Length: 110
Image (cartoon, rainbow, N blue to C red; front, side, top):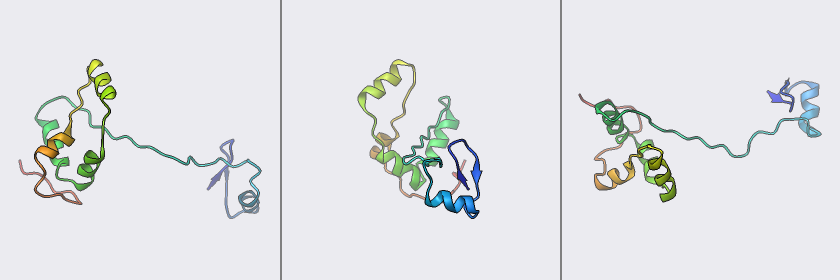
């Protein structure tokens, strides 16, 4: 479905849709060219959060993201001054690399 700037849906297969697709005249809403997603884990310190992070340390996608992440010192200091604790999982992984990484869910033993 195509959307006009006013939010009206236009069937791309209709006559109007074919005309607008070819000669949009600036009427169509342009999709954003860059998208950003941010995923955070929030939780109280304790065994549940520790277990969840231990589980994520077994997942390839999570480890790859942590290893690619870099926090700038000013951002870390701003978080700390606001009372937010940033757990440096990347440093934990560098000190203790996981023995095995999984592509899919594999439950941890209790």
